[in-house]
Image 1 (tube, rainbow, N blue to C red):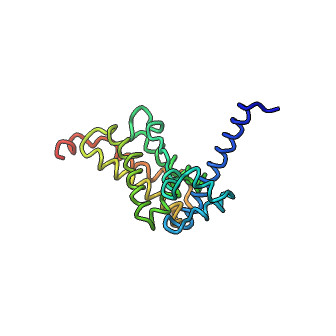
Image 2: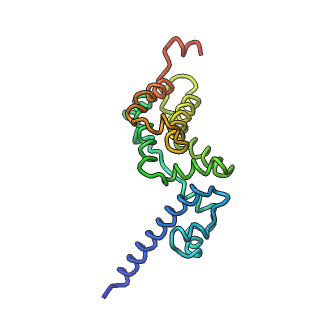
Image 3: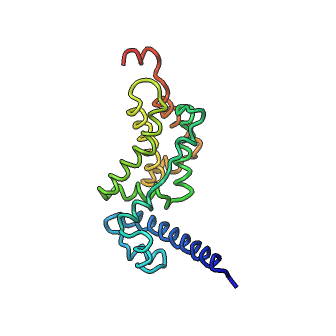
Length: 202
């Protein structure tokens, strides 16, 4: 006979599984339909749950969207020795590998929906600022740290979009190591301290 505590724990695990399934379904539906056309009914059908379950766990479509597309770039963990320039390959590799491993990841869903929804676009801008610029800029020495961090982030996101969303043939079909070999030096240049002469004249 299962104890009351055991029943409660089993119910909690079932609830966590249902919640995770709804989030995964939401990313797929938002990614396919965009934010405006996606509905709670469609997400419930994709997750194979009742519409009431989606509302119970997440409330509104907006709340579900925000939770479904929240992600952590893990900048601090990827920054070796507190040196963003030395860690540029870690940043880009992690971003590209995450998308390749999971086309329905939070980052993928957010990037896709941001192309057609102003609300999603604003969420993406806020999230990118918090997850990349706000974390990288304080680690940079030299002038214009936030602009340099923003440019580096734009390069990485641009490569990711062209490789995995637009699937530009030459980039989508390229070997990951070749992409890193050519792109990482550019990102390092943006993140590394400028030469003393350049810093003095800035």
